[in-house]
Image (tube, rainbow, N blue to C red; front, side):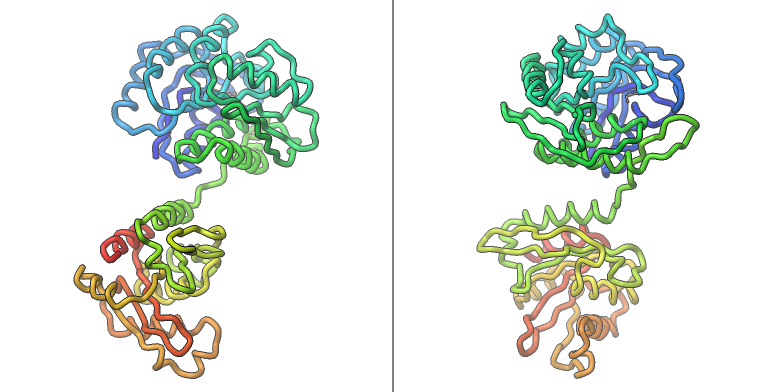
Length: 433
Ligand code: PXL
């Protein structure tokens, strides 16, 4: 997934293009950027700003749009009239959702939108936006209305909606509440969502909110979910802020967990495979992905819960957690001891026809017989699977794609499908289902 930020350069990297690229990356998206203006600032002081020429702004936007499939766009600092006109003419016929973050002034007092560009900002950019994200002073300035209560905030949101923004989020950090509450107006309905209040001032927290919102929208999440996730992400980043320079703390994004990112995408794809309910066993399914060279199942990410079926419906119950899976994770833990490249697995219902299909598809299939298991391993919790995998791969020189067993008294037969990554597992799965 690719997202584009059209914004100013902030050499202190808390906000602007540099901040946005960090947020996009931390959330697993590929970020590209078109710079509208250069600023010189640090965590204490704002020095200067200078617009980029219309020609180079236009050329930057065209160069990325003609190459990458862009899933969402964020607009930040736009500085002057001609920049606004350029952005408007480049984006007006595009069908990509646009998050407009009104950037009027920096935390350190720098002017980021010239006063004479304000009417064009309202006339040209607001109507392009899928969602606009002002805080309270910005929303007041856009509408000329005062916000003293949530009732006022709702009227202001409706006013901004009538100015052409499809949806509106008013960030309520300036409201006199114990918590920080944000207000979303979507399709004539209001939603409010809150987060604990952090007192520390920071540089970059607002940019992180709109950039995270943009990524969530690009991922296809609904607006309410996208906005409340963005609120959590900016809260965590402000909590994680550090005084890197001598002035304000700079909000810092937490690193993305690529393992989590890849596995959650694969699980989404798994539940959407046509007819997959036929392959979910009685004990249900788990899907796991391990860190390299795991020492215990606490290094292996899996569902604390299961992928379950009810009739033809397959759904994910629970969330991803390291140590969340016992059975499938123990299988991966055992297999990595001999074949370290194999780090992902899913369990599916045993059916001899699946095994035949796998062999026909030239997958490497291994087997163990639970009946042969010793009494000692049988009675020790978690030992059976390690014993089974070990005995199935004992004589193998190459890693197997499948290991299965035909069950035992009171034990359901099962197929485990292995791969280097969740994507690799899915590639094999679609060959046999
Ligand atoms: O946080 C708003 C912002 C956005 N873009 C640029 C900035 C700032 C704040 O300083 O400098 C370029």
